[in-house]
Structures are given as structure tokens and as C-alpha cells.
Length: 127
Image (cartoon, rainbow, N blue to C red; front, side):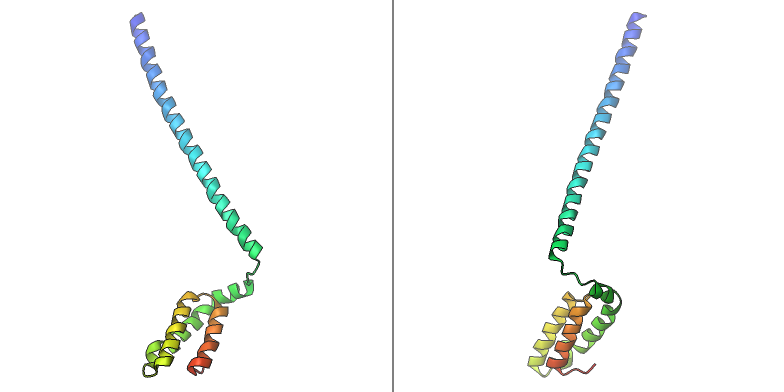
């Protein structure tokens, strides 16, 4: 009878040890995840700090770009396509340059307006 009790106690002791090991592993995983989240937050804070220090964000352009940039982009893309100026190699190169910049500044209304002015001056386009 004592041997049976001892066998049961040792089996319970082993099962408790396994549960304890699993709990410790879970704790380690949670701590690692929390520490890695802190590093990501630090990166976000440093980016925000850098943007604040630069201080050259034009929120008017951001709002205007949200609503007006897509239409102007499409219009410029149609009008400044290099195939429209095929016989004139100089204008084809200018149109290529403007088309490249269009892709880069697709969502920036201020830059798209600058490209529109460039297209009017260099490609003789009327809007």
C-alpha cells in the first residue's frame, strides 16, 4: 500500500513537473514577444520624432491629394504618354521623363501640378 502511494505521488510529481515546464516555456515566449513589441514601438517613436523635427509636412497638400490627385494623375498620364509625341524624339524624351515622375508622385497633388506646368511649357499641352 505504501508502495502504491509512493508510485502515485511520483507520477503526480512528474505530471506537475511537465505542467511547470510548459508554464515556464509559455512565460518565456510571452516575455520575448513583449520585448520585441517594445523595440517596434521604439522604431515607430523614432520615425515620428524624425518627422516632427523635419517639420515640413504640408497637411493642406495631404488633404487635397486625397481627393484630387487621382484625376489629375490620369489626365497627365493620357496627355503625356510618349507615344503621343512619336515623330519628335526630343518631346518623346521629355514625355518619358514626365511619365517616370508621374509614377513617383502619383498621390502628391502639389508635385502633379508642377508636372502639369512642366508639360504645358515643354510639350505645349493645353488643359
